[in-house]
Image 1 (cartoon, rainbow, N blue to C red):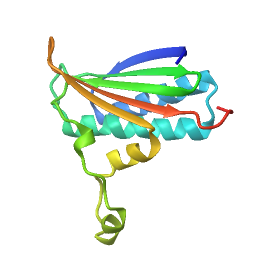
Image 2 (cartoon, rainbow, N blue to C red):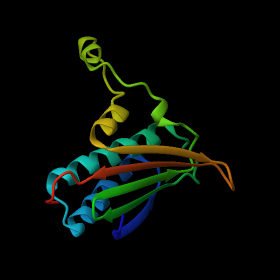
Image 3 (spheres, helix red, strand yellow):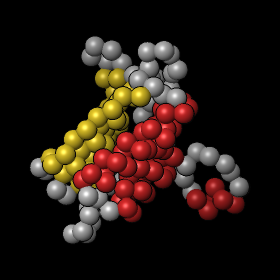
Length: 146
């Protein structure tokens, strides 16, 4: 995998930061020449992952979210790091969508959306120097035009 473009930002885990994060990710993909559909899907996955951190993570003054984007020849890789409470989103069971809509539930679809849009999802928690969560998302270009 040859990296062609890389960028990184930090944000506070506050919901009002989401538009800034979305704009950052979208502008990165526009700069890389990625088509609108791919851009939208990856931005939605980033938005869902960051929203989960913002809603369920700790809200101390020192809490941060770092988003790194990498554009490769065959994919985009997103790494979302935070120092909130340890939580492995991959442990969330897949939703039965028929049951979900039959019961007319609300919310709780973030990981389901991410699973449907992203090709590879990895989670790691480190306690080396201080607690740190890392969520890696990889979405491959499935066509020759991106």
